[in-house]
Picture 1 (cartoon, one colour):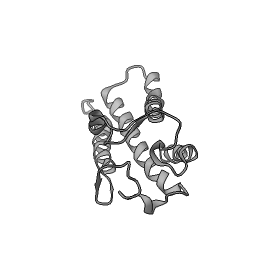
Picture 2: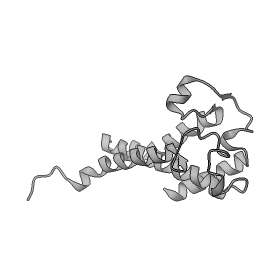
Picture 3: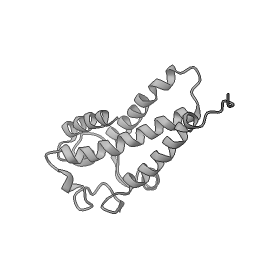
Picture 4: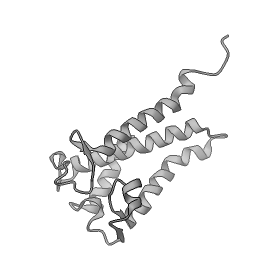
Amino acid sequence: MSLLAIGFAQVEIQIEGSAGWGASLPTWRIENHWLLDVFWGGRAMTGYHAWVFPWIALFFHWPLLHLPRPTWRDEAGVIAAIIQFWIIEDAMWFVMNPGFGWQALNPAVAHWHKHWLWGLPVEYWGGTLVMLGLLWYSQRRILHTDAPPV
């Protein structure tokens, strides 16, 4: 998971350079809309992000297409993996980007992250909690099988 996130962070660094959140990409942008506040953390929606987010989701869902009967627990595991991927990818984008660095992960520089808590974007904290909950639910069948005792 981490290797995928680090690899994709490098791809984004090569695409975006030192202009975060696709600021200099030749694509459409929606800067202000109430739905962005609800679903996107107040960040702009760009054509780039409109394509890359579903593509990554599809990529992570690919293994479910090969299961005979995917379950809601399988889906929870996939969503947990997607959340983990994006948190690691975003943090690594700062760490590895020569135009930023870890010290630039702050509200003054990373202005596209609108909400902060304890020095990090609130999505990192909330995403981690949701990810852990989904991971717990997805692994519950392994920890507590429904099979009767032998």
